[in-house]
Length: 384
Image 1 (spheres, helix red, strand yellow):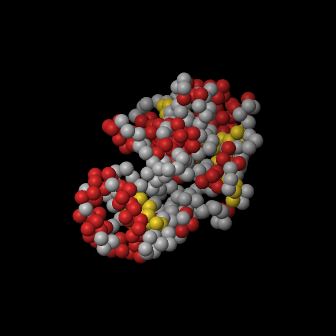
Image 2 (image 1 turned 120 degrees about the vertical axis):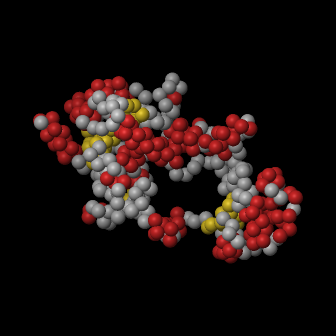
Image 3 (image 1 turned 30 degrees about the horizontal axis):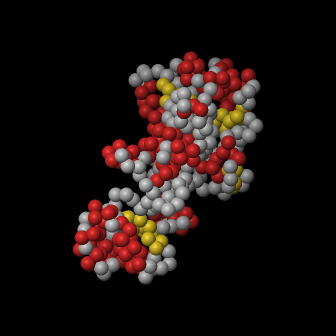
């Protein structure tokens, strides 16, 4: 089981917000003992974010299960020494300190590898630690804007739009976890201490890999198509008489079947729509024609008709609607809490790695919930 893969591995999580804590949670989901060291008095920044469920931030709850929380004062010499002792006994250290902070704390890689000759140290940043990158503030939205991703997101006539989920943070956390797993494997072959330095800007460009390749090939900036795509038409959200649905035709064969489904066989035969290149060149004309047809009937009418003709299409759900679908129930996307204290707590989305939903050991910890427990273990280990 994936939830047993990293049992016996200890991770010290000094990161805040989303990317680093998510990477640590992935390790925790896979069985690692994750110690989340939080800076007093308020702890992780996400604890203060809305919305709130029973006094706890839902953002914090979403990326911090399977951890133990230790509350320490980073400005206190004794507490800082405790952190270093935790690092000395860990397999992995994850941090997201602003530039220069790690060195002041004595927790930069050159310092941590002295404490622990086999440490896997993952330092997450927004724009890297170069002369320019280290000066920039690091937030998902700023990286979306800086990278160019926002410039082609949204409707053609509207302003640049931020992708609503924290996609750059989330993807950086995922890349970080994969790099950590690879580094642990490398350590088995005697690689010694390793420093991983993922950044949000790296993740942003990887998410745009085919747009970057397209620009390199053509010299043309990608533009906004809303729900549409530059490489296929018709491929976007259309309005029916009572709502919206997504149509995704990407081949000539699908377009031929679409013309049959719409009782418009001449449409596929027209030279301006014959072949994908022609449809792309006459995108606006085809969209106008389809809009006039689709507005005559309901979403369910069109989805049934399109399904019958084997044309890719689907509803545009609200989140509440999506959570009630059969697919969500079949996939068992929510964890089944093993902790009785969490039975009435917030349902949390399971890790995609664990298809049976078994990766739950601890609910997201209260601030400093395990401070006494972890420090007692630390003292015991030092006494041996």
